[in-house]
Length: 97
Image (tube, rainbow, N blue to C red):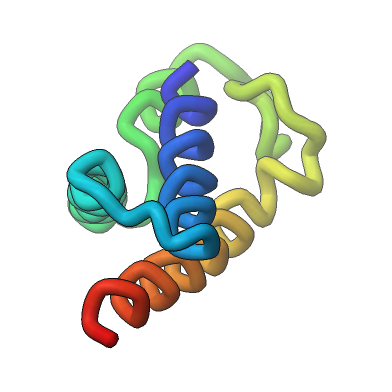
């Protein structure tokens, strides 16, 4: 559920930038994603829930703790960080120019 929440926020940021519908919710979403990034940096790029789940699993798969295909779980941060940065750039361009 947490993963889905942040994915929806990232797509909302992208949507609001593309369709020039930047509003307060867009900026709140950007702030939430920045907050998530700070949490990931503090925990050395791992979700704190994944760290806790590792204690209870012997699985070495990237998707052992989330219901995603392994390839998506493996490249999750790369894919969604890229989408977030694209959305952020578009929002900033729309706002500043």
